[in-house]
Each structure stands twice: as C-alpha cells, then as structure tokens.
Length: 241
Ligand SMILES: Nc1ncnc2c1ncn2[C@@H]1O[C@H](COP(=O)(O)OP(=O)(O)O)[C@@H](O)[C@H]1O
Ligand SMILES: [Mg+2]
Image (cartoon, rainbow, N blue to C red; front, side, top):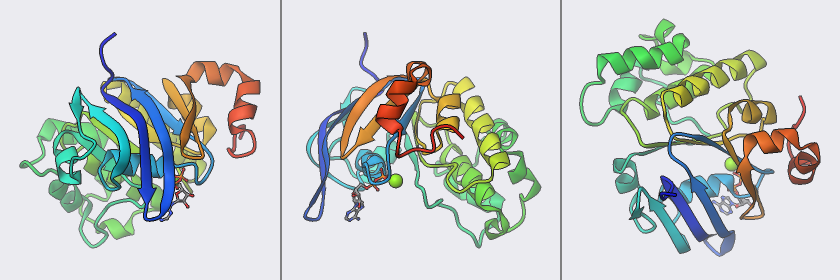
C-alpha cells in the first residue's frame, strides 16, 4: 500500500516543562475523513498544533505527502497545503463575510466557481455576505472559519471541534457541509466530542488518551461495537445523545 497523505510516527511534544504528547503514531489516508476523539485534555488540539508547527515536536516524525515536515515553520506547512481551523474560530469580526473570504485566499482572487461551491456548502454565509462577521451566530462563525480554510484548494484540512456549543440544527448543517466536503474528495482530520456527529461522518477513527493514540480503525467498527465504545469513550464522551 502507498504511504498515507499524513503520517505521524512516535511524536512527542513538550509545552514548556510539560510532556504532553507521549509518542503519537497514526496515519491519515487521502480522500477520507478521519475522526480524532478523546476526552478533554487527551492531547487532540496539541496534536493538530504540532502538525501545523505551532508546537514543535521534541522527537518523532511527521511526514506529509512523502515529505518530512517535522521541523517546518507554520507558514511552510500551510504553504504545503494543510489548512487548520482552530477551536477559537479564526475570523475577523470587524470585516464583512465577503472580506473574510477574500482575505483568506492568499494567492489571488477566489475562483468564482469555487466561491459558488463554498456558498452552497454554507448558505447562511451568502445571506450575511456584506455584513460584519461579528453579527454571525456561533455556528455561522464556525462555518465562515471553515470557508476561509477552503477558500483555496487544500490537500488536508484539520478542524478542531467545529460543533462545540452549537444548537442541534446547526450541528446538522455542519454534518451536511462535511458530507459535501467528503464527496468532493477532501482529506479531513476532524476533532469531535459529539459522537453522533463523529459516527455520522467518520470513515476512520483515532481515539487519544493521555497523549497517545489508544485505538485506530474503521468508524463503522466502533459504531457497531458498543462494548468498545464504552471502553474507549464511555465516561468521557456524550456517546448516545
Ligand atoms: N499552553 C499550554 N500550556 C500548558 N499545558 C497545556 C497547554 N495547552 C495544553 N496543555 C495541556 O496539554 C494537555 C492536552 O491538551 P489539549 O491538547 O488541549 O487536549 P484536548 O484538545 O484533547 O482537550 C492538557 O493536559 C492541557 O492542560
Ligand atoms: Mg482541544
């Protein structure tokens, strides 16, 4: 089998004096949606930040498309085609929705067909096109942050807890948008606490605990195995809402 799009091997990350990632090993295959689950504090956000070079791995390796990016700067990781949507949505609240999207495309104007596609994924953004992004609801801001991340074609999307704190109707819209992104062939690594959303979307699943990957496999196998869900996620996730 060919190498996956992204491969982490025995990645350790220290934040100041704290040893946070204790040897993260995982593969993210191209063209699939991989869910990253685990209780609060397990190390999910630290894993995404380490991939982006926002934290520097103290040992281990991160390979993206066959290239070692372990020591790359964040701009160079982004330039290589990895987009990151942090939990604290990266948008400019004083600028309009349009300006937010225009600014996100670094290499020139957003292609109009791509813009239509993006606004089809997130129709609410079209309604608020010329309004300051600060006027959007929490879920709409999250959608704008994702739209910014895909304003240009990307090879890999890292998205941290996009449904956190959203009303059920917004969670459903978010699930629909990620379904469409999957259909478009995007490769996505998605951190999610909502097991309903995770099971609806994931092709593959990684479960983290205490800075390590403690389970990896097909999402459908985890969905079918309640004992495994209980063991891996039981007390930590809102597993059966
Ligand atoms: N800036 C930081 N300084 C010190 N410890 C941190 C920092 N960021 C995260 N941590 C610690 O690292 C661990 C993993 O955090 P995080 O990756 O945010 O977990 P998750 O995203 O799975 O909830 C937690 O124990 C957290 O307290
Ligand atoms: Mg987190």
